[in-house]
Length: 262
Image (cartoon, rainbow, N blue to C red; front, side):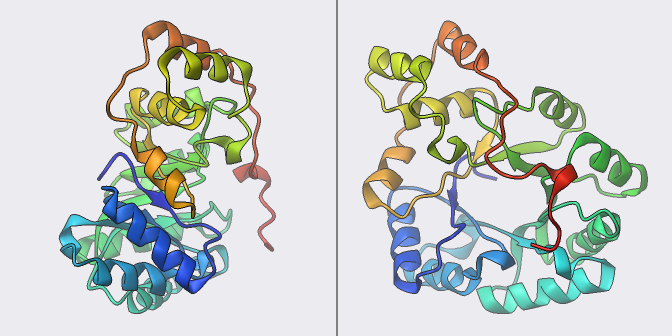
């Protein structure tokens, strides 16, 4: 799984979505993260086919939405997603949120999809440690990925340590805190020190923490800028300065208090 990819949340305009994915692929992105909720799985599939890049070279993630969860329901939802993508398989399939009554059965269906080779990796999204504990108690295949909100103001260190212990890769959605961390004085200071943008500093910080990232943008210049994070390293001191910024501040919802009628 690539450590860096494009998130396509809120990309609802057909042409803009196609153009954004095309731009990302041209700048070397090889992972695209979508979901049934986003309403753009068809565009993701179309853009990948148009790119001419072999399907096996692009890592595609999608997710089952909350009102489609449960064992049989998840299997049906996956078929719908696969048809929209016009693909034979998905690289990673995630439970979007841990719906209390159904998330365990949803993951059991994801295990079946893996056994049937319809997905290449299993995973979940927005799961706390207690959700993962329930899944691991019954699972034959441990989740390979947990995608969660993570950025300098919400570092989720305990959850990251738990996932690392159980060999679950962590992917940060909203790795830039919906832009809310980019004006932080500490990050601005580091940005000036090394001649990189604040977004590049934060994305590099994630990578050096062994976190996968899927920044979202529809602006070509920002898509390019976000990819230019492999030609420098933050020092240990700079990493520690960013680590000190944690406030446990969410810009999205807490999985334990999600409004499941969304």
